[in-house]
Amino acid sequence: MKIVIGIGVLIAVLVGVALLLPFVVDLNKYQEQYRPLIEEALNRKVTLQDIRLTIWPRLGARVAGFTVIEDPAFGTGPFASLSSVDVGVKLMPLLSGKVEVEEITLREPVITVIKNKNGVLNAATLGRKGVAASETPSRAPVPSPDGPLKILALLAVDRVSLAGGKVTYRDFSQAKPVEYVLQGMELLLQSVHLGSSPNLHLALTVQPMNLPISLDGTFGPLKETADLDAIDLHVAVGNTNFAIAGKTAGQHMALTVTAPAINAADLPMTLPLKKPVEVKDFKVSAEMKGQDMRLSDLSFQLFEGQVVAQGGLTSGAAAPPFNGKLTIGGLQLGPAIDAVAETPVSISGTAGADLSVMGKGFAMPDLTRALEGAGHVAVKDGKIDGVNFLQEAASILKVAGVSVGEAKATAFSTIETDLAIKQGVVMLQNLLMDSHDFQATGGGTIGFDHALNMTVNLRLSEALSQQVAGSSPVARLAVKEGRLTLPLLIGGTLDAPSYGLDMKGLTGKVQEQIKQKAEEAIGGLLKGTTKPKDLEQEGKQLLKGLFSR
Image 1 (cartoon, rainbow, N blue to C red):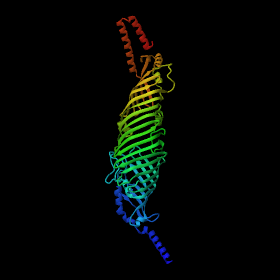
Image 2 (image 1 turned 180 degrees about the vertical axis):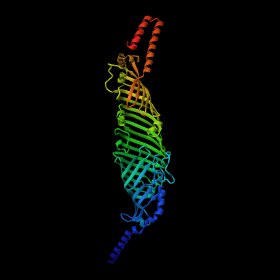
Image 3 (image 1 turned 90 degrees about the horizontal axis):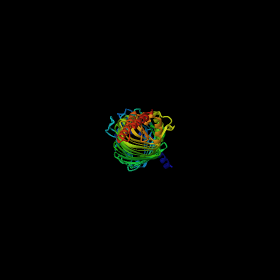
């Protein structure tokens, strides 16, 4: 009985000592020893309010009021803060003198990410000792081998969790600053050891879109550098699912992202679209080496067509230089235009294109100044809604009684053109448009500001030419080889086009017609086949034909 009582007393003493340990053992005295190591690893100043020993729910320590101070180039407030960090250790290894971390729990972390007016992130210098934030747009953040991944690899912990996190992102590089908030964050990392590939789970909601996002997968194995031999992640953005695979080595990263379908309404960004767009069979493969990114393969299905692209971009400047090639086949142009803009004139049909471009920056002033390109566009079996070219021609010629259709539309079998882009202008060359009632050729320009300046030679069918020529004295001047050709001028804007007749072109046709008749008459006189009296009669007929009087 005495032995049982003794054991009970001993247990009570041990429990009492254990309960008193958090109050007796002061871990704050170790701050001066470990805080400089943390500051050196993060390249930021750090503050700690309190460090205490914990017994329950597991043996370890709790750090309260942990704050990482902002880079001075971005402000004086905190970059990140946590209400507490709980570190739990394994008991059995501790009894043998070894410290093995079992779990780290981050409670209510708050992080503020800022992109300054030069397009540089405040996180660019995190973990990069001796590197200040860029004050000019010529520099961009480059991944550092001494960054957060190295810190993660050296943790050697079974489980890292995060609860109630919030990340605020502010972008001051745009004309109108934007702000997004990631809230309700949940994070779980398991098996964080050198040589292991951690399992990752992340869930959050993006505001102001109220968009849920989750991420699950593995990456690793963890090394003392930021190199990862394999990345295998699955991301859900709203109702859209992405698969991400790749690897990293130093400043080189290769990634492939695929998705069976992407709905623009599910993306956490505002796109210049009038209607939701769905992309199918999306795939992109890209490589990044420092500031250089190479898009080796981008392909997807859009509006029943296939889009394939390649390109490259160099970051680090306010207007980053880029180049690319785009190939489109089988795209339904009508729904595509309706999704982008609502205009009085729209084109439908099956479109294909080959285009090469190069430029600097993606804002409209940068594109207007620097975008250059060349290519070929073709549209088959379509219709131009909002304009009937034959009606416009008949109206200009003041033709009455000629049937050119009542619909405010122009049907065609083919439209194709070569194009060149320079200084905010799209130049159309070798334009060809085939229709049942006419063929149009010509060219001109379309400005980024929607300004039109085009000349189109409208050559009507023989049957329609006879109808128009019989009703219009002006039209007779342009008849050649039985077909009427009208030099049509198109000006105004895409939203409000205007149409006119190139009278200089018609004058040339009159001169050509009179010259031809004169040559025939003089030839007849010289050969003796035409008499002066007959020539006088032919002259009268010519004038009557030209002026209908």
